[in-house]
Length: 570
Image (cartoon, rainbow, N blue to C red; front, top):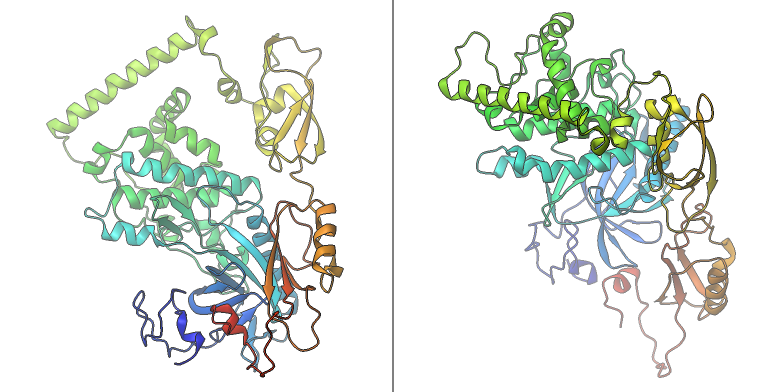
């Protein structure tokens, strides 16, 4: 294929310099997009060039793309629920199947809400970076980062053993768990955590990808459901049980099980009637008992029996003394629990009906010795060394409903998420929180800025509960880009945006057509009218070029959009 469009591969967005086949990914330059997806080189939102489709499921399709302004590869997620919508005859527009309008509208709003939240959550180390959302062709497109990566599934399959030790898994998985907690605090439940949706980059870090609306991750609904067998919790199959953060906790623990054990856990529906998920003895011997216990609690079949929060799972995976004691109690009650749920899983590290080997006997003895030392340490911590070891974390684990003591500790709430504090049973038993919301240029949305009672020990409550006034951040005050910026002189446009508080304004010169006024704003990104945005967001003004000082009198052929895109302007 001749022309400037042959300079970039539609499969990987790297330069191919006129070759018939991409030397990087092997894509043929004459390839075509399979139906019913967008034709290759379609431009959406006036900015993003569409390449080959990479993945599709119940709520849409994901393409590799090209940002014509930043001149970089991106990923483009198109909202295209194939069960209730279809591609129109023009090959681009999405049209709703008759009778499905209400469902389409609900799902469309879910898509916008999900990706708008993700755009606001940049900076989390274990999360893909979402850049933009544009509406075009009767639907919406979410644009997020493209980076060299492979799935955790591929990484494990190509590793020498196919598994990881806990020492190897911990630095990979714990940042993912922290990011998952931030997603939950923002009201996002992924519902698709799996080895296929966790990406490992060249930096060796895992990132969460594969986001879809909840309607596409629940069986027996109106959309084609995408569930990952072995990683999807039972409540996603339409069984009784509300979905929530605990749904992701099940999936996270299932992925950890796959990494440590080397096999996919049995599907939740089969475990409900015949639970055969057993930890092999050799894996149990090399894995800390508290990790096995944490996985067991997070992989309980019924939601009400399962670990319910990221904070709880993180504590169990960190083996704090309190969680060690709780896990010991959990193991002690395990046979009765298995009888009630119908599970026949042997406790982690035990093989039913087999005599323990000398090596295993020694390991058990060492474990018992360690447990005794832990118990002694806990007793000392709460008796002889009580004053030195009393912490906020100990207080937070106190059971709700206990009487208010004579003296309490006022924790330092500043910098912590208000949602976490407000849902803490211990804090609610001794404090009444009054909240004021303020914009803050430094504190992220939902973070506590200040408290009216300073952090202190031995505080004496004045009444039944202590009233604490908290100031909570609403994040940076967002501003809207005025619609009249388009068509305005670039100098005036810059001045107006600066007065509104926008601090990052970038000018990109674009070729004009006949009748265009030089030095006027032709387009703006983000698009005016798309909602209020963070003033620190980069505003890109596409400004029409003025005539060249050495303009030739000989007519030149018009410069096409693709000429401009691929840097071949004459």
